[in-house]
Image (cartoon, rainbow, N blue to C red; front, side):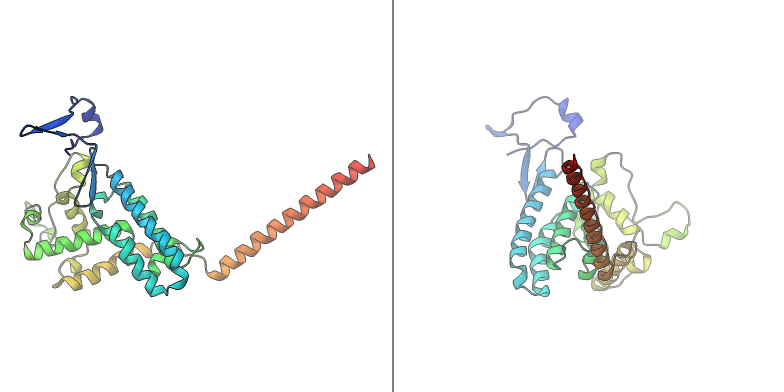
Length: 276
């Protein structure tokens, strides 16, 4: 199968092509292809790939929900990480900054509620913080930053190291010694999703003391702590269990009062009908 990649506006003006002739064999043009487990569509929107990931992840989440009462919390975490997170993490850099990230985040939200047996009583951010799980967008940035660290320290693989250039100002500036990467200029949305554009943006936002870590384990530890602090400290405080219980009693009391009022109105109407 062959595929023609293009933007929606350009492909409308492109002449119709039914296939590609390769050595006398006509290879048909398809709307999507699967390569290395990633479904690529002709507009590179990755909506089909995201749908496949969500479908597989939700299948395992439903299976986990059925057996969750028989598992301990540690066992449930292990199952969720191996069956759900492994799918969310695979090739997730392709959807970084895309609207498909919201769909993947919904999958992670469902998984964390099944693991902790929470039925929408607490905020999802509090549940993720309890398990020390980073949201999908942050997990993508974390993985990209770790790959960048290894590329900069080892120079391998070559096909990635050639895409990264250290920032060198034209004149002497304080930022010259900040161990930053040069951020290329792009003009299309496709180019903004490339490794050469996305990596400097993520790397330069990491604090300097973390970028200068001597070992990869140290870099990972400090980077995850930084992401966790920046994400979870910005979340609004959640209600305590007592506050949730008090809210439920208040709602129940309102329902009881409304029911009593309806009963009184019905009795008054019946009395009025009988008198007439």
